[in-house]
Length: 356
Image 1: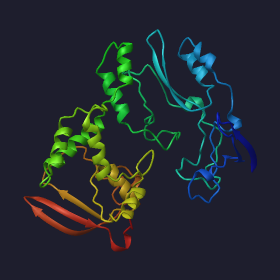
Image 2: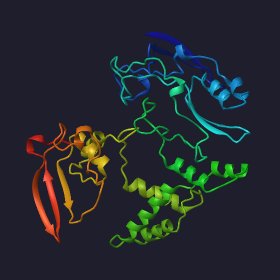
Image 3: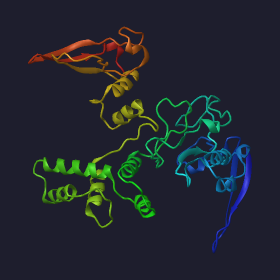
């Protein structure tokens, strides 16, 4: 471990002096984490001298085409960025740039305590996401997820929510031959479809509440008539956010994808130990794979439909084959019949039940 003495010069004030401890994995940041007793170091390519290099700004500014642009961006080492390209020939492109560590052991959201997740160099530039002249003629990222499921190289555990990116795509899809003024309008756009949707749901909930107060009815009228534009002079955005803060306890479970075990554990910690889930085959497959399914309510309807019926559980390997090595047996606990429909409740055997 190395110790560096640092001085931060403060204008019109007293300079701040302190020691910085450095390890082979970067500076020690434990003092920045409240109640942390372990020694935690932050490794980042920006701080790692083995990755340091020059910035290809001149090559980027003098690039005449996509190939020269790619050649320049291939030399960019830090920080990681989303970069878009356009030229006077009508071409557009996108390229993720910067050194991203090669992690054969995968990405984890907790401090690494073993050798499994040590960096093994950086990902090749050719493996980073890029696009040139997409068929739809639109490129947008807004810091949202830029890779599909199953992408061969893990890039990050954290992406921005997709709502802003969706808004950009919809806006661009509805406009043609845009001017600089149009693009400025998009850049400063403050329309929030998410907040608009939540506002309508809150208004509906108030409308159907038992004996809502006069203030609540007024709030419902404000939310119902709102168009989703987040003007500071509008009352609706403030009402919506106050309602969310008062009624919603947001649980963050996972980064790149939902961590079902973390979600159920967080709910159990809040006293919610009996959880009813409603979702498609992918959610159900995650719950089964985590061993969290105790009861399954399944309705059988007297309707012949087909062909090509899917299972109620998405592909979990052997689960697609009846009786496969991962297939779970259930016991019929209850059944009701109504107009030819069978409403069945199945349970896992007592010795095979998981604990949320």
